[in-house]
Amino acid sequence: MRMEWSLAVWNGPSQYGPSGFAGQTDGVRGPRGSRRSPGVFTNGCFDLLHPGHVRSLEQARSLGDVLVVGLNSDASMRQLKGEPRPVVPEGERAELLAALASVDFVVIFGEATPRTLIARLLPDVLAKGTDWNGEIVGREEVEAAGGKVVSLPIEPGYSTTVILQKICAVAPKRPLPARS
Image (cartoon, rainbow, N blue to C red; front, side, top):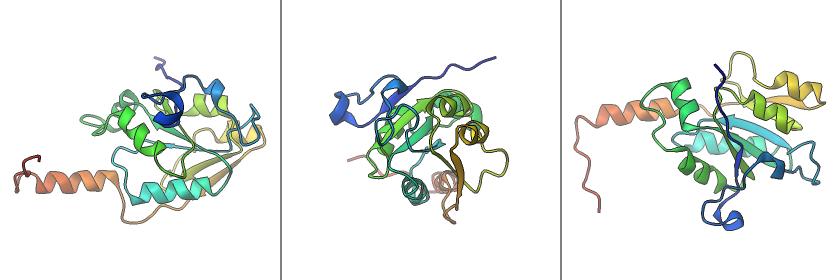
C-alpha cells in the first residue's frame, strides 16, 4: 500500500503568513534559482530537538548554500517509531527546525522514507548521519544526477530515545510541577 505524502515547504511565518507553509516544492529553488537543485538535503524525525540535531544540521549546511530538511510527518513517524511518537506534532517540529539559522527550508513528507522527495528535489548533496547503517535512501537518485552523498558523524551522547527514557524513568518518581 502506497502512503500519501505532502510537499508543504516551511520557511518561517514571516515569509508566508501566520502558517508559514509555502505549498508545493515547485517553489524550492537552488542557490542560483535553478530548478535542478536545492543544494543540500537531509532528513529525520527531529521529535525532541537536541544539540546533536543542531550540530548535525550545521554540518549539513556547511556542505552547500541552501539546506532543505525533510521532516517525517506525524503518520510517517508513528509508522517508523510506533506509538506514542511523535511527542511534538509535525507543525511544531517544522517551526523549530525553520527557526535554526542553518535551515533554509523544511519539507514535511508522509512516506516511510524520503526517496520520492529526494528524487523530485535532486540535491547536489545528500547528507545523512553515520548512525544510518544500512542503505542511504536516495543515494542512487542523487548520484545518478551528478550529486554526492556525505555521511555526517553523529554527536555522541545525544538521542531522542534516551531523552524520552530518562523522562519516563523520572516521571513516576517525581510529580511534575504545576504549570505557571
